[in-house]
Image (cartoon, rainbow, N blue to C red; front, side, top):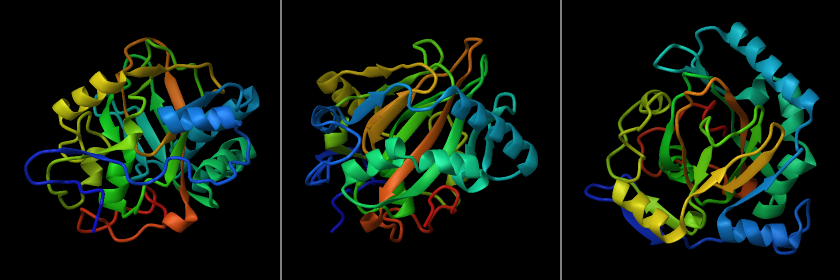
Length: 285
């Protein structure tokens, strides 16, 4: 029986999460006991100076080079408003330098510590929110999509968002509902064929999007945290956190390297609520 039922017929559902948040027994790794406890409680952890200035320059240079090389490729997602690059997927496959960054102890090592297992990259991308044009990302839980459309069995996964520019209150910083990772929100609507092409460019995808009443319930219970930080800072957050970000109409871009780690024991199966799995660049198998 699937304990994370979603893409439902009539209305969304909020159910308690039956699986752990921190899976490790001894919790040995880069984070302290207090930091692990904070992650378990809030669903996220932040740190500064995880990337150096040279790392940031490397990532931004690689994005420009890869985008020029790929041209009109499905891994390059563009803003519907003006054609600027919105996201570039599978960057750890397209750049050895970015792959090396992802493998570091302070990045992949944190994932191994929290998930209590060896890990692999389920998805990597660089999100670009250019000044004056960066579009919003509506409220969602990543795990809902990864479960429904990729076949991820449990939320034994986490994301690391590494700031390549300052993440400010004004330029579309991430919003997280702390504690929302302890509840699973099932969404309404059967997943259509080839849906991933629509969902990557839509501000508010019609499927895999929680109902406003459910987001309100979570926000009323837990509040909303704004995640800001200087370039080089990192946000580690549970795959089941409810999160979103507004658009960027400031002159200042907001760019992040985004890496998803999945436990090897949590390998993908057939999708739980879709007819076919998404392409490999969205869900590496």
